[in-house]
Length: 320
Image (cartoon, rainbow, N blue to C red):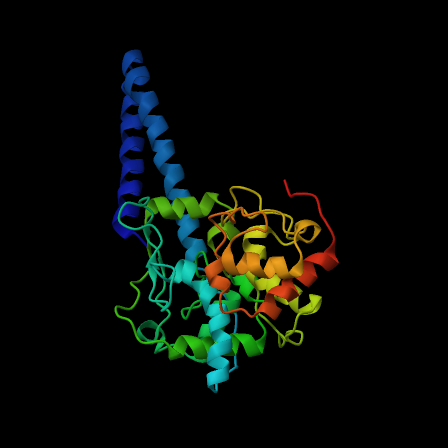
């Protein structure tokens, strides 16, 4: 909590409230109009800011009773290789250059908005060494940190679909990375950031999800629509919406186009080439927001599975 900033806002509210009271009690009309009205408005403004900031900090401080996962990792080379498939998707936020290792990244940098310090954490052993496997799994799939509070801007609503096998593989991969110092700094949200949290829909920034109460099992891996549906829930829905018919602008990640139309004009082989090269059959380049390099550890059959799922679902109108 930004105690100095919050104290300044509260003090400003009290000061302008006191000045408004003195102006109104002055008995002179011109003083009441020239000084009283602005002071009343400023007192109300700082009062509203105080209330909103407290609401925002309350959201950040709320304890989520999600139990720590009881899953534990027994690492093997095959698990690490499987985990890297999904770790590549983390590099967009958890790496400053979009590449591995996942050494963390300042979301806003030095010239960003004054909402505080908000890092995508360092996911190498330099930061995660003290975390249990279950705490890491809970953070990935349920968006809850070690302290029981919500994470921020963590796509746990998609990653909660990761199967037990795949999330264990991801943890095995994270632990296999070289330790890259320094560890992530603690989150510090300014008063302005807390106010934004109070007025913006909670799922835009806050990541906590309901606890998972049963095992998550993926379909058998292969070029099937069933396995493609599993992959799209993890990799595609964040930008392309839950029905894959395009992400509405202004809500979360860059909006992706309608994927349900792809089987109309691209074959399965061409779809594999598209996600490998970023180039359509007619020579056009894929959009700059499509992170195809994060899919490079997926097999051709994984991509064919996504295509099979898109083809099975039929064409939907663009989301508005």
